View 1: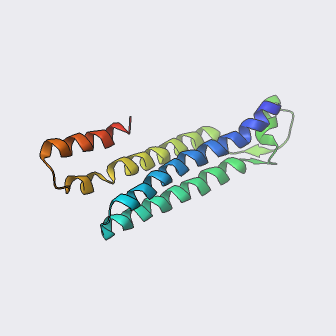
View 2: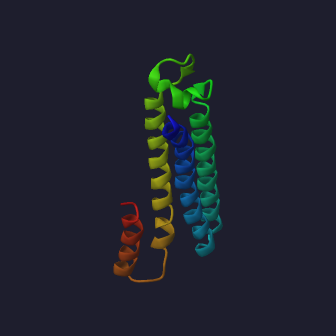
View 3: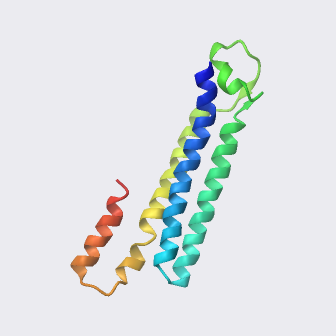
Length: 133
């Protein structure tokens, strides 16, 4: 039962670290791309990631009533109610994929404007897209 208690908090830390990694990449974009319109889009993406952290972590932490049911429900001896964790997992995955696509595709338009040959531009874009793998 103690491992389930640890997992309860570990899951929240894991989801936070995913979004914080995206935020660090987006902050890097702010440093290297001066275009004001692009920078606004980056700030929107950062807001999305912050919303992802708040939404997923709060949903995970308050998934059961009472809270300790999140790590004690396995034995079916404790009263309480939890919402559909399967649905939460799929929703979290979908929101994470949206964030990944945003972070990967966001700089492509800026990269296409670089003053270099097509071949080099294509290579740089492929490197960014390869990061999504």
